[in-house]
Image 1: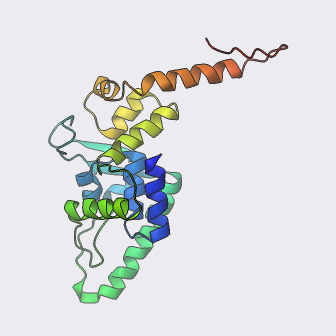
Image 2 (image 1 turned 90 degrees about the vertical axis):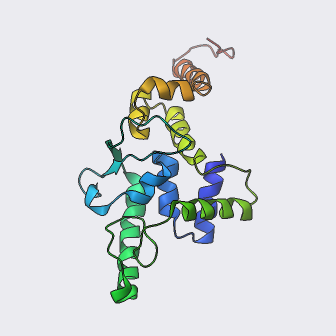
Image 3 (image 1 turned 180 degrees about the horizontal axis):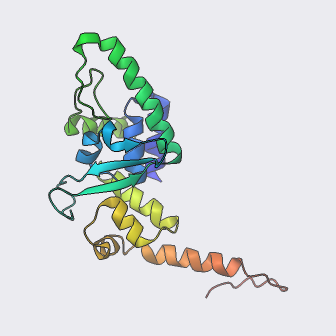
Length: 205
């Protein structure tokens, strides 16, 4: 999967924004949401969640409203990366001294200022080009998150809520081409799990 190649490239290159890209790829945040999420709306110790203020995206017009918030789970690797990022940000704050801008944002520039969405996309595009990856849009990382969850067997309603879609039917419509493959994989796994005394090599259902 191209998403995996991209994330691997970020690690090899020591990409500073790797935690942001990993979060978008696995949790499906929109670019404005990733750039605008704040530490005060996060809990990395107990609930391991982020409260995300939903923002508009030119590639996605399915917002619930102009001022919707949603809760995004950040467990496992995402929680680890965000914890490490927070330590890095503290080091950058000490290095910046009086020049530090206290925006309260999770993802910032080295001086604490807000990241420009254009810069995040430019970095993404530059990495893809340098690694000779197929041309994809930054927004496609959001689609990757949905695809990963579908393949993992996550319920469509949960995926819709994670992505911040107003209706889970919208999510199903967008990813309808993926659903048949996921359903077939589930059917194959079910059949394979049935104990058989005789090996049945024709396992199609």
